Amino acid sequence: GAGVSQSPSNKVTEKGKDVELRCDPISGHTALYWYRQSLGQGLEFLIYFQGNSAPDKSGLPSDRFSAERTGGSVSTLTIQRTQQEDSAVYLCASSLGGSGVKREQYFGPGTRLTVT
Amino acid sequence: QQQVKQSPQSLIVQKGGISIINCAYENTAFDYFPWYQQFPGKGPALLIAIRPDVSEKKEGRFTISFNKSAKQFSLHIMDSQPGDSATYFCAATDWGISSGSARQLTFGSGTQLTVLP
Image 1 (cartoon, rainbow over the protein chains, first blue to last red):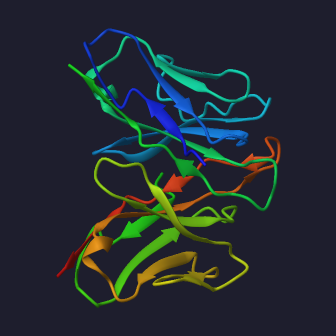
Image 2: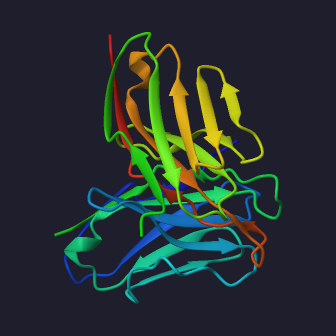
Image 3: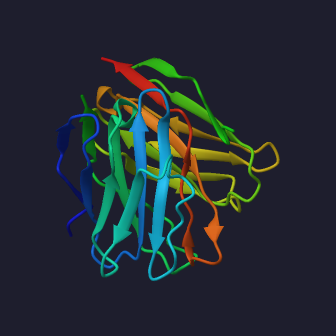
């Protein structure tokens, strides 16, 4: 079946602009995670959604970052007033969720964001 | 606070050799430990994972060894091949009781493996 997909694959934006990054999880996966990968910080957790529960936003670096998940499927990560330090690869992962047995998180290819 | 420490940062191995990457964790609530393989320009791909109730898990050429008392785990790649050249990340997570799903992964800093032909 199809894996996690993300769009766009690359995004170049000017400092101060807003950007939206999209994630389509694996069909049937109820848990969805956003991570950020940058040279200096490695792989960092941003936010995760599980079904209809309130999202865990504890990893969001500032209030310029937000995310939503519509209909329990597609998710959008929004970065407002982008800064150069936001340049990174944004990765989305999904997991079956809802069970203590299945823990595997599967990653998409990522969106490379460059803020000029 | 870095909760998962990974070493070495880089590793060069001859074809056919054994590659060993080590990780140590601090949070005793962690109960699931996956390893990911990442090629340039790609997302991390799940390689193998272990739970703390077993000390070793083997899948093909890849083996995880787990030492719960020392809070350490390691990845062994037997008969290393040039195609194994990639960045490897260890990770750890625990279970979110309120959310009913695995919580976020905490990653090690990564090991860049080069297997020479």
